[in-house]
Amino acid sequence: MPDPLGGWDYTWPLYLAAFLGYLLGSIPFGYVLTRAAGGVDLRKAGSGSTGATNVLRTGKKGLALATLLLDGGKGALAVYLGARYGPDTQVIAAGGAVIGHIYPVWLRFHGGKGVATTLGVILAISWPVGLAACLVWLVVALITRYSSLSSILAMLSAPLFLWLMLKFQREGMLSPDLPGLPQHVDLLVVLAIVVIVKHHANLQRLANGSESKIRLKRRSETAP
Image (cartoon, rainbow, N blue to C red; front, side):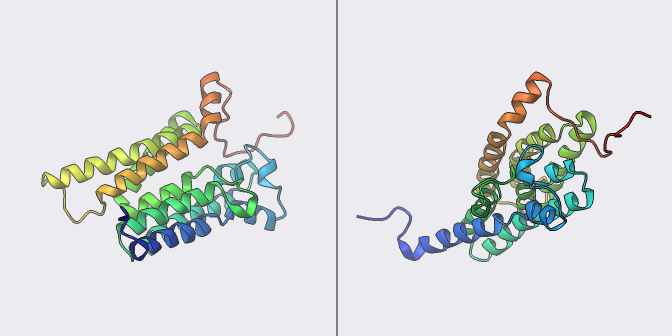
């Protein structure tokens, strides 16, 4: 019986990419950095996420920035390594990295929500689209002060931006040298769905007005 995927000789790099991408993505930088700094267990603080936003809630701005960069970096690295064996392998490795970040085996599958790692993937796949998604996040965050809403809208905008970019390239309105492939649009749609599903509790809090806002300054312990 013929194999629709082309047999083991074709599929083994895809399985390997998924496995290695998952292991790379599952490195819980936020958890490791806060524990190394003598901080709390992120799984028991704030939202329970191991991502940069929850690190920021502990008041460690430097650690939050480091977590953001490292979480994004592992997504970008997965894209870079996967690309050496073709676009299909690249897509699988990138998806594995995001899933690994959300469900890390080292923390009993309790990780972050995948936003920073997905942004790293987007920037590595197509830097113009990544910058546009980051701009969406920043603008929404400045207006609403909701990190969750900013993240959701940035994730939703990314596949649309990439689809438009590819469309304009086909029509000769943009340089064909800008990076991005049709299969990347499918990847970004899937990752957007995954990240939004992980934000289901945030969506409920946004709906009832109880979602916490971004605060760069800690509240004073005493009245002024």
